[in-house]
Length: 191
Ligand SMILES: Cc1cc2nc3c(=O)[nH]c(=O)nc-3n(C[C@H](O)[C@H](O)[C@H](O)COP(=O)(O)O)c2cc1C
Image (cartoon, rainbow, N blue to C red; front, side, top):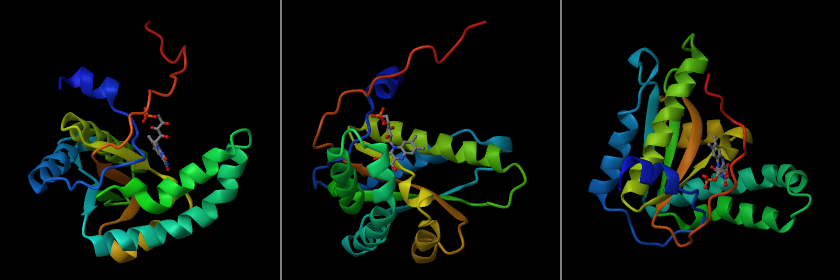
């Protein structure tokens, strides 16, 4: 897949086949994350790729707590599409059946240029999504667990000395083909 093809056709996938991701592919995907640009090349990121059934169960247990706290937020957000609440919660609690969940950590949360460093972590996440899609592997970037305050739970269980939890990324072969959600007009100017 060429670069433009990958970035225009990547979609957030919320239902996956159970097929495992070959280890060589998973390593290449993580290496693509490490290849991202970063503020003064500080590479303020750390990734934990969770794939063993036991460890995935631990992730899902924490996600159960996320769902509980997130439900009122979703009920407000989807007041006009209440069916979305159940759909979103099901994805969060089951990870959509993804065989891999990458936990992303911000290695030096006390770094003075916190915003710059966080932008670097985001660049690495996007590299992971695109590198996965290049191999036909779908993904979804999840900030809900961090937003709902479950970062410390992920830190404690999976990476006690690797900084602050930022996001989770589900990875797996897609079991759905979502259309591109509409993009808004007028979001750039050329001067
Ligand atoms: C920072 C960030 C956080 C996100 N968090 C979530 C999330 O918690 N749950 C979820 O289902 N999708 C999440 N997404 C995926 C977005 O909903 C998705 O990217 C958006 O709807 C556009 O769809 P697309 O990725 O298919 O282009 C997140 C995306 C980003 C960039």
